[in-house]
Length: 80
Image (cartoon, rainbow, N blue to C red; front, side):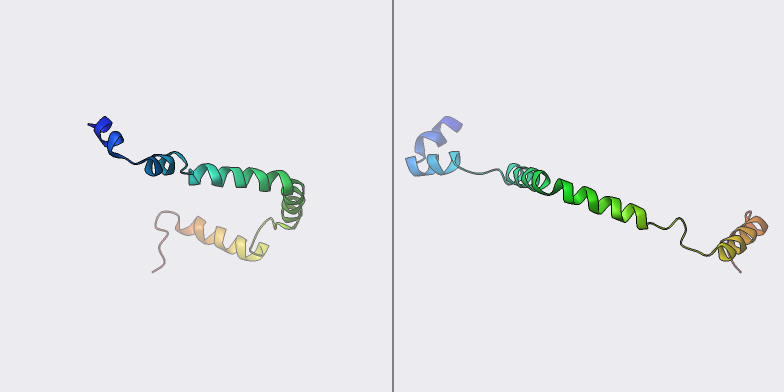
């Protein structure tokens, strides 16, 4: 059956189907090109962000109050 379909296709349709571009392959190629070009810059940005990362978001006192509350309510940790 597929051979009959191929025989009925014009030469232009055959050329068009052979020249289709895989969008995923195109995306991978672009990603690779960008990484090659900007990898050093991206690496230095990553290092900057890692330096600025905080160890904790809450002040020590607030964290301690929450841990104390958890210690008292761990069996039923839903506020009333």
